[in-house]
Image: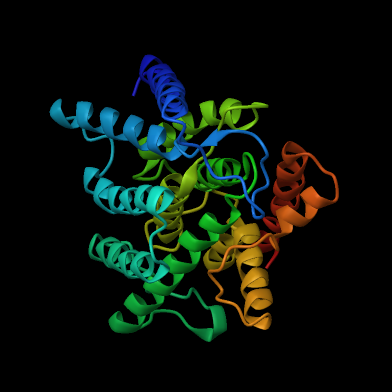
Length: 309
């Protein structure tokens, strides 16, 4: 991809974000404001739609020109999760249906070679049997996707978390990953959403369409980190499982904490509430932007651990 292509990705994403916002605003299709809402302004859940359309258009253009930017078959699992998210945004899909489709997508990724089959010495384990590795990969996929869906509760948090993981995985790598161009398109597509997320009115949120798709992309990146092909830069040494967990330490810890609280209150762990850590910081009076900065700075501190172990 050329610098012009990068600029066009950013521009197209901005245009789609603005166009979808304007269209849904005319239709008066806004995100509901209720007791669970953090925002008190009109907002549309169209950010993820703009990101996926941008990704699809650029991928389709390069596919027609027989230029392999990345493995285009990855658009299948990303597209399935995107469609599930769109349906959930507008029709509140049953969590059991989402759960089943997430397992289905995890199996697709496994069949594409993205599987966790080595614990790299954690708990004294290295290579694990094929069936066990498939079951464990599905479990990890479910954790990653739902943890990302859970943190999409305040402006800019899920966007920043996604960009951070993609950039760090590529930075630590000895060579560009097979998903480098996919990651670049995604990052550039997300940047315009900072403007629309932090507007005072008529905001644009990722929605489940965006958070589920991005969670799937992050799972793809982390499965690659845990694979044999991913090598750290010369001079860097880290335990791969600890590195993967530290890259998404906030979503993981927040998911675990919220599940414990909800089960303790005899509620479904998937029942939405405002017990997330970012919600608690908002209640303390911190602005959304400040909360995002605090969380990311703390996450970067945790990132030092796998290089010390």
